[in-house]
Amino acid sequence: MGVIAEIVGAAGVIITLAYLAMQIKQNTNQLHGEAINTFNSSQIALIIDFRDDAELVSAFIKCADNWESGSPQEQARTHAHALALLPLPRLAGVTRARCALFGAKTP
Image (cartoon, rainbow, N blue to C red):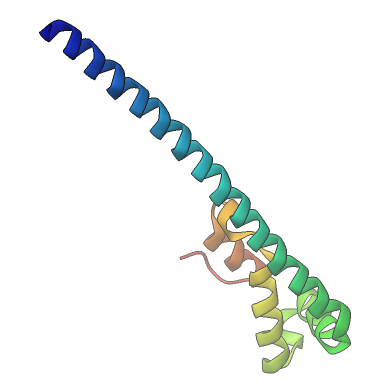
């Protein structure tokens, strides 16, 4: 009788672990989808900023061609939007990319 109880208990544990593994996988997939949606929403917002603000586009192009030619205000706007354009979670060496983008030394 004790052996049957142990077998039933072990089967219950295995079934529970399989269920938990499926739940974790489902939750991971859902969180991944939400992260992609959030990232896409932020990119759409940036595109709308560029579409609706000719001064931003002008400042961005000016500073991209020659960072020093932009005023402090143009540099600040360009910097903020350039950082937002980088898909930060997906890039390795983000710090190096940011420094290279703005001509700074890598920390």
